[in-house]
Amino acid sequence: MKYIFVVGGVMSGVGKGATTSSIGALLQSRGFAVTAVKIDPYINVDAGTMNPTEHGEVFVTVDGDETDQDIGNYERFLDTNITSVNYMTTGRVYLSVIERERAMGYKGRCVEVVPDVPQEVIDRIKRAGKNAKADVVLIEIGGTVGEYQNLLFLEAARILKLESPRNVATVLVSYLPIPASIGEMKTKPTQHAVRALNGTGIQPDLIICRATQMVDDVRKKKIGIFCNVQAEDVISAPNIDTIYEIPQMFDSQHVVERLMKKLGMRARKNDLAPWKKLVSTIKNTKREVKIAVLGKYFSTGDYVLSDAYMSVIEAIKHASWAHDVKPVLTWISSEDYEKDPKKLKDLAKFDGVVVPGGFGARGFEGNIAAIKYVREHKIPYLGLCYGLQMAVIEFARNKCGIARAHTQEVDAKTPDPVVHFMAGQKEKISGGKYGGTMRLGAYDCNLLKGSIARNAYGSDIISERHRHRYEVNNDYRETLQKNGLVLSGINEKLDLVEIVELPKSVHPFFVGVQFHPEFQSRPLNPHKLFMKFIETCK
Ligand code: GLN
Figure (cartoon, rainbow, N blue to C red):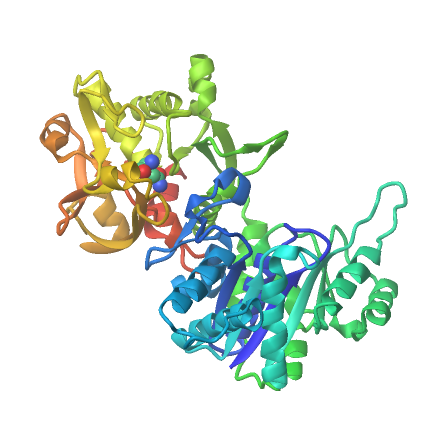
């Protein structure tokens, strides 16, 4: 097994995840079995307890782990399901070491930070590789070199290389600023990052230079000399229109050939055609489809970020490209409708509206008002998780005459809990057991013949990923159905409502799902429900 570590220098947020995924996709296109591991240096045991405005989306795996959004990138680029063994945090690693120590797993010897913690990291990396029957394991270490937090993970990389020098390579993703006052691309921060990495005993094999522009030969040579790498191993990674173009950009600079050479690997084939076709569609599609995404996790201070909804955004894009339309996304903070209901009529400008997952009371009534508007004005609507729950509450209030219909999440004492705690969830919350205790991971769902959902999926039974504590209250099923809501997806084993919709005769596309289909959409394999939604919007 070969191991490629991807580490960051200079600053975070420059695309380690996209780099890792793209190298993975390129290795796959050469015929290798690839898997990718994400290491987060947080004490949190998983990403489920982290605020998405700060940390980005919480991605859910088939086996119910709540992970960093990069696992989503890996799944999208590698078109494969990645499971819990591929994700670790400092908290998770320490928890295992301590539990093992308590169980006499170290047979009474003194357990030390080094080597026992890095060894646990190495064991996990190897397990992930074995589990995926991988030829190559890519390991992305979160954070930036020089930070105290990721030292133990760099130690793991160093020790693994010591153990198996021919099988380990390190890629540094750096950033080259071009200060406006100077107008020149500066290499010094990268030189410092490499020094910091050298200080941990690691020499990068390849340096990916993120920048707004191409890195010229003069700077490639300079980086080579100061950072002790060949100029061919200095890769230019300028800003581009779509992350799905990165595999091609790397391929033209022989990124994987360089890595394969260092690792003594020989390619079995080379097929980048599907990526090239996708990028050509992305660049050439002209006709637009305008989609509004209503949410609340958009702003940090003065900046607007949409990372909290990454998979939703990607799923909309994948489906749009597959229909040869260009998605134009608008982020709307649903609280705006509470402050100024007149704004609701702006929704008429859109071809479709999505309400993604969420938690809590903020923006709730704004969403309800928006859902009422799109239902009445026949604007295609896709509700994801909270987006289903709100659609059901809106329908109960305005079509079934249940004026105080609510979710117990927002109004614990509502006389009409149309959406209520799932079995066992109330006890978990009151016992303070928040971490990893929602309904998580993949569950089967049976689809109703003749429904929009059944037609979209093209099968009677599907499996989708969940992350929620509340559900549609079965006591209200009959009333909802009598008034025209179709319960088109049911988990028969647990007797849960999973999909609701309006008949086609009433509305072109009004569908809510209790799960998160966005987690299973891939650029080369778009999600069928999103495809149907976009087709209707188009
Ligand atoms: N807050 C809702 C629940 O816990 C929906 C969760 C979600 O949208 N992921 O049930």
